[in-house]
Structure formats: C-alpha cells, structure tokens
Length: 444
Image (cartoon, rainbow, N blue to C red; front, side, top):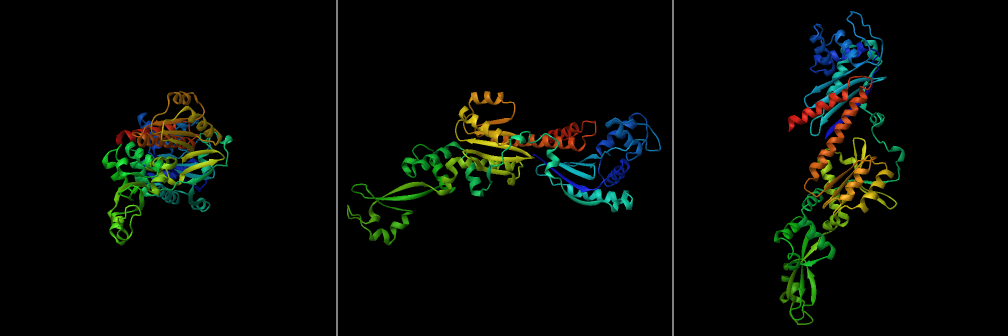
C-alpha cells in the first residue's frame, strides 16, 4: 500500500521566478527536481548550455508542458500564469511541491512501512523561501503547514461517484479487537479447528470421547490451549449412569467435597463414582463463532497489515434491516465487505449489490470460505456501475487483499499528482505510475 499525505500553507507565489528560486535552494539542499532535470537534459541534447536552475531551463520546462512558446532571452518573456513546481524522487518517497492560487501545496507518496519525509521537506521549503524571496514578500506569507482538507482530494472528481445516492443513516461502530481475538481468528482459518468448534458451540457441550471422534486428536488440545474450549467433568452414578454434578477439575473431587457427598442411588461417595471428561466452548469462542465474527476480525487484521488505518475500518453498519459486515475507507474510497463462512450464492449477491448502491459504496469485496457461485461471477461481470472483487477460499485472502489495497492506493497517488499539476500538459500521472512500477519491480 502507498500512503498519500499532503500539507498546505498560506503562501501565494505570484511568479514562476519565485518558485524557481525556492527550487534552486532545494537543489542546493540535495533534492533532485524531476521536471527541471528533464528540461535540462533536453537543452543539453540540442546543444544549449544552461544551468539546471537557470531561467532558460525553467522557460523550456514551461514551454514543453504548456502551450507557451520558448525562446532564449535574458529577459523573462512568458506571460504571468500559474507557476509550475516540481516532483522530487528521494529514496523511497516521491515528494511534490506546487503553488495553487493563494496556497503552496506539498505532498508525499511513500510505500507502507517507510518513514515519512514530508515534514523535513516542508521545513526545507520554508528555509529555501527565506533564502530566495524578498523579505517584504516573505512577511506576507505564513508557513504554518496544515493537513490538506479532504475536499482537496475529492474535488478532482474521481472519488465518491455515487455521492448523490449516499444515505447518511448508517449506524457504524469502529473496529475493536484484542490480540487474543486476532490469534484465534487466524487459527479458525483452518477448517478442522473451525468446524470442530462450530459443532461444539451448536450443541453447547460434548463428551471428550465424542468430540474427538471426527477430528484429529491434537485439534481439541490446541483449542483448549488458545482459550476456545475448557474442560469440565461429569460425576455419574456407577449404578444407573445418572448425572450427579459437574466439576471443573479432578482436584475438586479429591477434596473434602468429594468425600462428604454420597450418591442417593448407590450410596458411594462422589469421589468413587464415574468421572467423564466434557468439552465446553468458552464465551470467547462463542463470540467468534456466532455471526462468523472470527471472519470480521480476520479480514480487519488483514486490512491493517496491508496498511489500512484501523480508525478507517467500521463493523456492523446497519440501517433498518440492512447490515454491512465491514466498511473500510481506503484513501477516500468507501469499500463494503460481505463475509460468508459458506458458499456465496446469487441470493447473497443481489442484496449486497443493492446495499452498495443505496449507501454509496465506491467498491465491494466478497469473501467466501468456500466458493463464489458461477452465476454470481456472471452477475458481477454484468455490473458496470460498481466494481466488486470476489475472493474464494482462505488460502489467498491476505495476499489478494494486500494487492487490492495496493491498487487503490496507487490509483489515488497517480490521481493526486494529476490534480496538483492539472494545468501542465505533460502526463504527470505517467511519471508517478512509472516511479511506483519501477520501485515494485526492484522489490520483486
């Protein structure tokens, strides 16, 4: 996943010369301006000896990226229009600076797990402005960097395409899970553990000999070790097998309690009667199995590991009789998740698609522990409005979700670059896309 972060300051740069001066100081600080380097290389290729930070290089950049003409002159001949900033490739970050009317915008695109350089970049720009701008101009500027408002990303027009249909009456609760729940949900991905526990939750409790009949002997031991099952012992009359009481351990019968009480049928003390081991699901197990909550925990954990902010994930969104298992906000895009611990059929697809449209989803993900029916896949292929990703089985869920989140973040990164440099005719989006693809190729 790629993180996209942006800040802006109330800094109005009135001319190309002012942003050129700032970028010249950034070059001196070790930052490499991609657009100006491209213009510099082009000038060198046609035999024009011009410095990277020269007015000639800046004019060439504006000429090849806008409709303005280029000619060499010691005077700046271009009319006053929106100045052009630049893009900087710094280690694992792609940094951008661009004047935008009365403010100066800085943005960063970086992969998940990489430390941010945006704060350092913004501070360096401030120092560059102090060193390059006239003091009177500088006094009218405020370099108090604040996060870009959400609408700055939205107004580009690629997000929330269904905003007109959105209903605001979804009651959502934030995702909350404990380390024990995460560990248990990962265990329940394995069918033998999951099915054994589901059977026990359905019946309430079972004799150990019966519970072990249809499963591997080690399955119950691990479920007990993880706190999903506990043992009880039935004290039964040796004469008629009637149940006398339940104890939590053998030690209870070896105490005075087991020696004092006698069976009303055969007269034996309780510690001399039959003792039968029983498995009982814990409250922790019931909470995970009921409503397949273990899947909610599992998918949430997978999303967080893919880089999605936990605070952007919501569970059990409801409105009337409608319910959505998980809603995740991924870079401004609302993604609905439908989770089934069984086959996902056409009867599930229709209401899920309807809820997505009714409550303004930008996309959806279906996760089935078994399979997604072929008629569902055909139905999804016929839907043009909202993309839905089906995931079958449990083996590839983590990697598929990671790729899905990565694609969304890459698309957002490319679009943000296009938004920042929308008046530049050069395809900035292609540059950002090439940087991301090139970096991923190196990782592979």
